[in-house]
Image 1 (cartoon, rainbow, N blue to C red):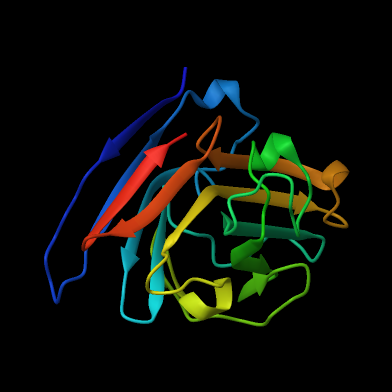
Image 2 (spheres, rainbow, N blue to C red; image 1 turned 180 degrees about the horizontal axis):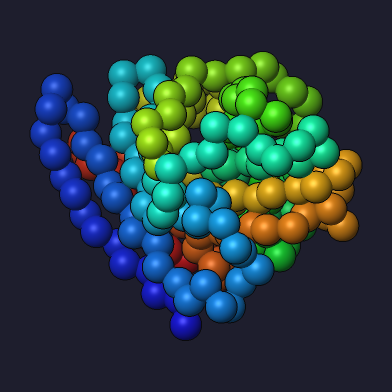
Length: 198
């Protein structure tokens, strides 16, 4: 049985606050066999102009995939309007649970090439990213995902997956998601991150 432990890790540095989500589950319950796709922790920081998302896997990210037919993805799936009936991606409830995905933001690996992307029904190009061993650090401009300083809140899930072939659901070979059921609700209020498991 999967357990979600929310660990409030408030740190004060130039008025930046973060909250860490620790993801634990029984690997026998989900079709995943690769620890570089196994979600370990999620950290969100509200910066000046950006939302900084750190996705931590159990093991280091691979430097390349087996061959040209294979590609892998690590994404945060954002429901900006918090309306499960509107979606620019899907619906694929076994992957995204109960949210309507307005923005898919993350990293892809094809052959030995990493590429970030922001997708809202159309590919909106790359975003700044960094890889540090088992961590992916994404910086998402708030305006790109329609957030204002007075209203920083959204629902989200995190999804990793590995495909062999054309990228369609029938070519999916491994995946992981967090949370296992439902979704996370994030808001920045009174200088603090608040994350709830819904």
